[in-house]
Image (cartoon, rainbow, N blue to C red):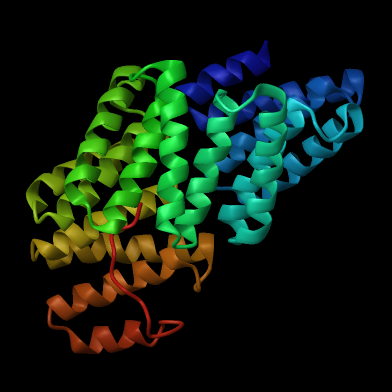
Length: 331
């Protein structure tokens, strides 16, 4: 079916093709059966997920909410499909709006449903634990985030074994957390394990491989291994430019990290190209007050400070929404 073929392209990282197929399936199903059918909710959810992956959060939120309304009407409030949609909607609310309170509410509602249906050691329980870990990391509550990640990781290793994409997700997220806590050696170890899993499963040209390459490069910058970090950022960027839509924030994020690396290597002109291209993308996606945008602007300032261009430093400092920005490699 068109929907199943869309899943195939989604798994391959061919997001535009998946979107095309999901849209076609949705139109056909809506014309034949109407709106209030479980399969209609499924198609809405699948298309919304593609928009989410592509960073088109407003479109994704609209479709997730439509899917959720259908599912609640059909099944009530304590059905597994309702929990799935709550989880997906929470991700959009988090990234699109930065609304931590509403995001946590949605994730905890999903977690309660899954624990009631499946018990404590189920893949869907691990999904909610992981997502709550992401939320607490974003709030700066690192101890709670690590506790949630490790609980999710233990569940997934028990269910899937050690070489599964869902295990790699938790390894990657835990690596991000440990890097931010300053445990660079352990973070590198986790990233390398996640990268090996993702290369084995997806091959070398998948967006998920690029994410881990970018994160690993960030740790190597912290450890002072700039030349190796450059190799990883270059590989990640090549994948993203090939697989993701133009102007995607993941690509911009890698550009920013690559620019930081080139600044460290004193290759200022090359760094400037990446940093000036990435900043407006991140600003347009997240707004000027978002952490990612502020850190992107701070990277530009750090570049011009290292390059001894005080007039440029002043120009970009004037764009800062406040004076509390701290330079940090993003993930």
